[in-house]
Length: 202
Image (cartoon, rainbow, N blue to C red; front, top):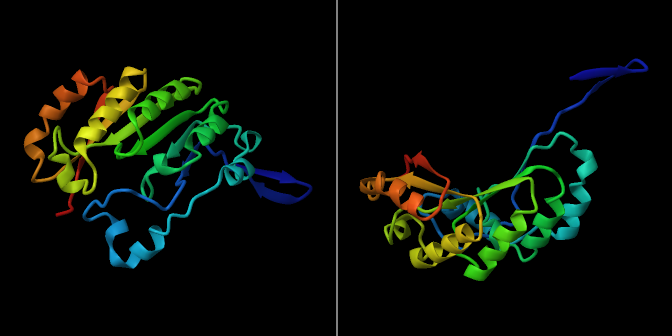
């Protein structure tokens, strides 16, 4: 949209979606992830993070009147590793926006995840997308460094406490035999839906 004021042309952007990478840290090592490639590893594994103060300074509700979605994307980082994660969620809880969080689910405790579910109830709506690439320890083949048993306990605690979850399943040759099985397990475990990604990674 363009406006004119005293002969000066201005462009006004309607921002509805914000992606936020809170840190440069991830606790697991998925083979084929660009984090694991030599050209990037030194840059993204320095464990840098945005402070809560920085978040508050750069993201003010009045500056984003049209916001609909705030996405803690997990493309580079594991957002739940941030030590001030709860306080950051609290900062956005009054924004009247959907909160989306992508996670590998292998950090924190069951109590922590239960508390997160309770906290997210104060937002307009929310969804946690869990990257789990198997219905058992098959998931650990790609999600190197994660422990399926721990992930399972964490998502159960979150879902049981009223958290809204999506199971994200990346389909590889080694886990494609579980493609239909995951739908059944996700329903049993209280997930809202299953998201499939068909990977070209070896």
